[in-house]
Length: 187
Ligand SMILES: Cc1cc2nc3c(=O)[nH]c(=O)nc-3n(C[C@H](O)[C@H](O)[C@H](O)COP(=O)(O)O)c2cc1C
Image (tube, helix red, strand yellow):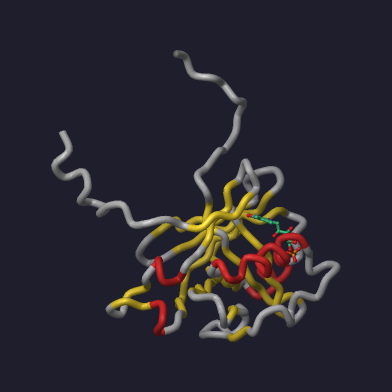
């Protein structure tokens, strides 16, 4: 049986959903983001790809800081709300209880299990519709309840994913094996 060509399609796996935050005109604003990736482990660097028309972009450019907040499934409706409504039309500054860290201008969300505070290091205008903001993670914040042996525990943070072609949010599953381990005896 031959392969079926379905057209050029970046059918990526379900993508982690995050809320990216910035202060716009001195007020916190958050948008829902699926086009997001870690691009270096140590020191940690993240990239977020935002459409050129996003209100949040103004704040990232203004302060040279932004935050990446990982919500748990309980925040799904609030995340979707931030993905439907632009700060250009709706004041999103009061949706979440926020806090600031070392950089002082990157608003983070108290009831997200993981908040990463980023300093902008590069703004890449390399594709037609989006701008890629690259940031050093200067600090990561969590709560005791999400740690196991002092280490962030993915299962406890209970994040969710975006499934791009059916436009659904889905939860993560079980741990299925050890990385750098499962293949050791494979022949
Ligand atoms: C599931 C989902 C994923 C999204 N992913 C992105 C994304 O990766 N990049 C982006 O620019 N917009 C993305 N959006 C759209 C923005 O979140 C949305 O346009 C938001 O209202 C922009 O807010 P702002 O104008 O206040 O910045 C996504 C929306 C949803 C619902």
